[in-house]
Image 1: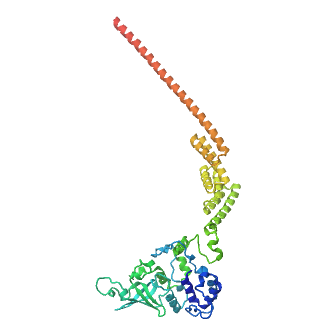
Image 2: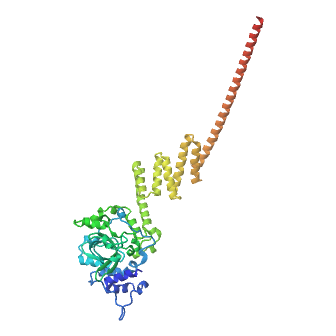
Image 3: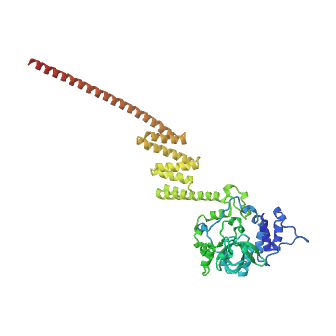
Length: 473
């Protein structure tokens, strides 16, 4: 239970909220120490910061009924909140001027809100108005951290004592470095809310731990916070909050919700809620938004599949394909859409595309009968094509794949038996052809040798006859 927040609410709304809390939260053990029962002699409720009428009684009733949720720690989960160390996040979410700049709020009330919300360690920016021997005074015009308020015209003054001005050299007066009119970024060191006095420091030790790396001291106009620069841009115009918001680049970021949720340290799978019926502890994982969106997408995709099937029956194959593709854009893993599109691919002769769709469908739903059946049929058909191209080994792999998916698929079994017979027959024919070629080769070699012997005999007879003729002469 965030007890400080409870006390702040009681301090703002006063005794009427205390009475309502006693009524609504009397059985809640977290509130018993904070809300003692009413009676004489007991501690008085925290005084309200300002006298208020009964105008906000509905808000008080809401706070009292939802107090156990509003002030609980469940708003922050174990998800680490992202820290913003610079304003480069403008691309991720809209950085807006303070809301009160668009509203007609009296300056006295804005001043009161500023002193109510500002805290030690917050970063303020102002301009030096005067320099004294004990320090310098600065007029504040914006905040860089904490609750951002519209204070540019409120003439709120802060003192930076000499002891809180770091020296920029080993000798000399630290104040000699500064001039009237300098833009100064400082950390709030002390606050006197009653007298509305603020003391600031230029030492980083005065910063809160999350802001420890922030530069303090003189800054340029380019280093002013983006929300303040936006304030200056629209100060003289009649821009509405909505118009400025919609013109912001970060507002159009499709991931803005996810970014802001992570920035606040909230979990999408375990979100806080002020509706008791939507408390996450009462729901299973499939009841969260992510699972519900998945179911919704599947439902929309099925509607497209049904329209596509009707088109397919009418012979309007192009329209059917468009509907199947639309279904898969909505739900990329939709089994029915994958099976329907695969069947259309198979009908048009694009067997490889059909096989891809059937395989994805079967991965997503291994028990889907049509995905299994159509995949096996298409594998057998593709194997037949390869068989006609005499790519027997490739065809065999498709038949085997079909049998691995469904070992009882008779078409694949018959095709594989037939293929193996044909492969055996083809092997035998190749062996016979090889033997025949070998015999022909041997016969050819024999014929050539015999011709050579005849030539040698004729050559021998010829030489003998020449020898006889020579001896007779």
